[in-house]
Amino acid sequence: MTGVAVRPLAVADLAAAARLHAALLPHGFFVSLGLRYLRAYYGTFLASPHAIGLAADLEGQPVGVLVGTSRNAAHYRWVIRHRGLRLAVLGASAMLVRPAVAAWFLPHAPSPLRPPRAARGARTRPPGWQTRAH
Image (cartoon, rainbow, N blue to C red; front, side, top):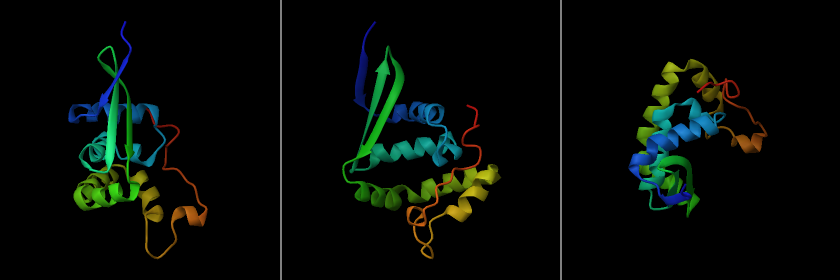
């Protein structure tokens, strides 16, 4: 038996990263947008010059993924500029086939007309976040 091998995240790991995220963190909004969205989201950490991704394998099987940013604001600016349209299209497409997610998202979407959610003190979850089966 060999130990866990940690290596840089690769394009070939994006599907496994999405599956692991959905299976182990099933309560988040991004999970409610589906595996295609999650793959694209993890892809931003590969492509952005302000991010890093690592994969962990055990006996050749993916067992973990870690992503992070070296400059968080710069990373998200890069994502909006270079991948924002793709993420928006994937998110909107997912909401078209998941109306409950769209119904939750629309009143919670960022708007210049109201303060950020943290400032409002609201903490809500997308529909089905506890009961979603994988």
